[in-house]
Image 1: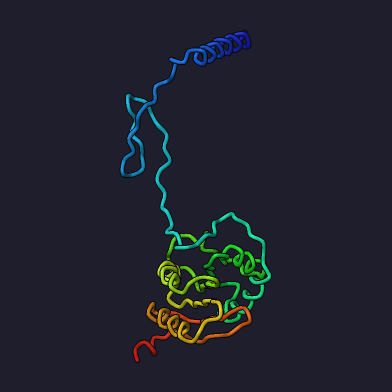
Image 2: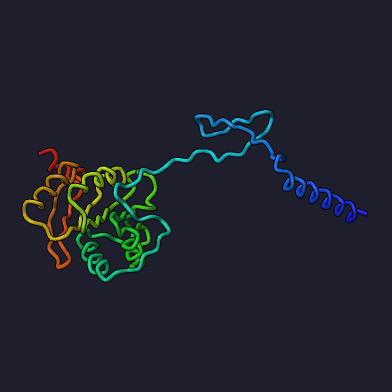
Length: 216
């Protein structure tokens, strides 16, 4: 008896749906809703609504085109710079590393293949909470003038003793001096520079790591 009732209900429902398609005037009214400042929607006319609550949005890195989930093929150039960057920063696999640049996702995958499983890219590094011990910035084929915004964005992610490595295309002496001044202005002590066939690099550390020097 139950199957017969079910079939009957199905037949009636199908007929009603067919009728609604035949009749162009038969359109269900849309219930208007108002979204509150907390990201919740208020029902109208007793009709409940479903709405996803608002979520915190992590600030985006200016000029960063890499996104989480976009897999990129490993290039020979990234292989040639990742080793000297790790050596210059003196990173260990136990440290948290954030990678910044147009190929940050690719370089992060290179690091993880080498056992640096706590490495993250600019696309999946979370919210800024001074949680990273090192930052590797790949700024090849990019203007130095755009580095200021990236440094401002990066500042909240680095801990008080964090190390910073910036990799650039080969630069003239004046451009290198400008870079050192910009890094020092943001509370870093420039430790050394390095030249490489793929470009040049700068190593710096947070000035909080040198309290005696700061006091002097």
